[in-house]
Length: 167
Image (cartoon, rainbow, N blue to C red; front, top):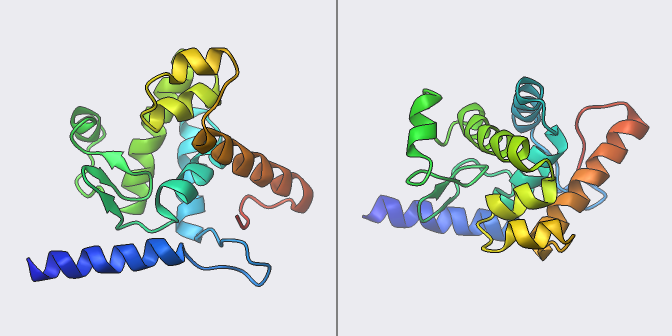
C-alpha cells in the first residue's frame, strides 16, 4: 500500500510539472516517444503528430501515469481495451512502445471508420456526443487543443525538416 501511495504521489508531481521544458518554455518530446509515434503512424497510416499531441495532453509524456483504468502515455483503458491489448501481444502497458502501439491501433481503427481526427479524438477522449458534434464541426476544448498541437508539430516538421520537436 505504501509503495502504491508513493507511486501515485510521484505521478501527481510529474503531472503537475508536466515534463521537461526547453529554453523557449515548450515541452520537449522524448526521443523514445517520438520514435514510437513515428513507427506506429507509418505502420497504421495515421498522423504521428496526432499521436504525439495526444500523449502530450493525456500524460505529459510520462509513461507511468495512471488514472483509474487508464494507463501510460496514451492513457489506454486496460479494461475497455483488454482484447486489443491481448491481440497486440502487449504484456507491459507502461512500456513506451507497447502503450503507443495500443493507442495508435485504436486511433487508426477510429480514423478508418470516421475519417476525421476531430471525431476520432472526441471518441478517444470518451466524449458522449463526439460523432454528432464532430459531423457538425463542433469539437470539445480537448479535441481543439490536440488538433492545434498536432498542426503546430506538422508546421514545425515542415519548417525545420525534423520529425520531432517541442510542444
